[in-house]
Image (tube, rainbow, N blue to C red; front, top):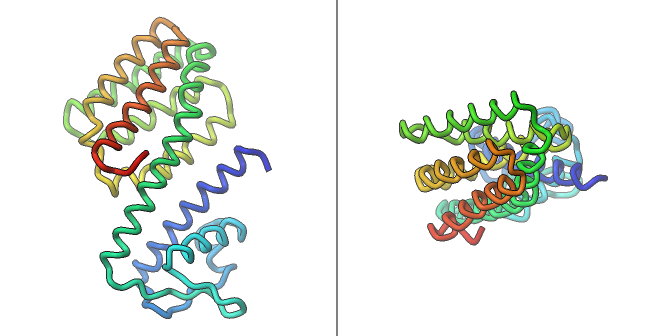
Length: 233
């Protein structure tokens, strides 16, 4: 299995883990209740047995379920509720850190390649999406979706299909942690400033400057989250 395939499977398993967790809460399933069997869960969440088993193992390690060989998977009693919240929060913080590590590995290089390979039309599209982010921030609106499409436009301009497939997976995994930790207001103005710097380099097709600015933006976000007490990301 390639490194990209392994990463994709890991992120998909984390997504399924969250879906099973909410399935237990929303159904709702009481402590001692049995989850549907493997084939049914695979059908329900649209994943392979390998991915499902990885997600279930993680939930079992956190104490949400118990896998009984030959019998099935059962919901555990996680009372009192505050313990669940604290462990859930810690899980989200860890995931946020892991996701930003991946972004730091990929997105500065993607920005450099976009600067080198992108057509004039593609760079204009990046600029248009940057303005959508800026407008959302200036109007006090949620800017997570415009910011995501802004970064996706960089990846599209790399003309690398593997990277185009990978980034949406990372961003989808990022959404839950972002919403649960409620950090958007903290990042609004820094994001606006970082994007302006990034676009200045892009307009000049300065690939080293673009790469530096993207890395600085991600590092800036990491530092702000760390300072605000959202875990050492």
